Image (cartoon, rainbow over all chains, first blue to last red; front, side):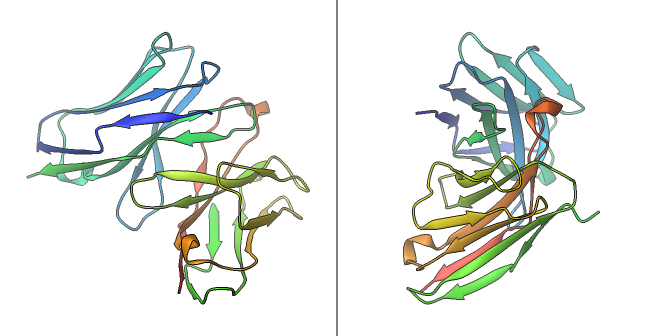
Amino acid sequence: GENVEQHPSTLSVQEGDSAVIKCTYSDSASNYFPWYKQELGKRPQLIIDIRSNVGEKKDQRIAVTLNKTAKHFSLHITETQPEDSAVYFCAAKVGNTGKLIFGQGTTLQVKP
Amino acid sequence: NAGVTQTPKFRVLKTGQSMTLLCAQDMNHEYMYWYRQDPGMGLRLIHYSVGEGTTAKGEVPDGYNVSRLKKQNFLLGLESAAPSQTSVYFCASSYSRLQGNQPQHFGDGTRLSIL
């Protein structure tokens, strides 16, 4: 069935360093890939998304890249800050009902 | 504009009890979803709805039922709660595919413990 694999499961970086989280998906028809940030005890919140007609998208310190041939997409956070510490989820849309399949999550810790 | 509102926020049940979780959205979204979140397993789709009066099964539907009698509301029911259903439940909603690919907006979640 459809599947999204996310790596690493935990990531610890020093403040100011960059962080990269990678996901692969199985459904070649997927054409929409959102990333969510979830702080402890809070709801998942969309931080950036990318559609299959582009290869890269940036929003200030965060960027997402997409390689449709390899069925692989990544989140890049530059100049990390302690407030970036959270769990990050990637997702891929499957079918035409808006359904998302989520990765297992990456716990990012930014050390001051 | 409250977005997606879930009630209750917390609940403790005994095995075998039943309950209904309510999700309400005020964004005029067509699509609504129920997920459960367990440690290390991300968000797994239980059931979803593409419009008033319609429902469909997701990845982990067993033990749950849903109803979408009104466009703005999506109810998740547990007929006979089991300890394996202890989890955090999130509701989400989005515009339909007619508006292109749109993100899902999540509620604050319901923490459910089954003893």
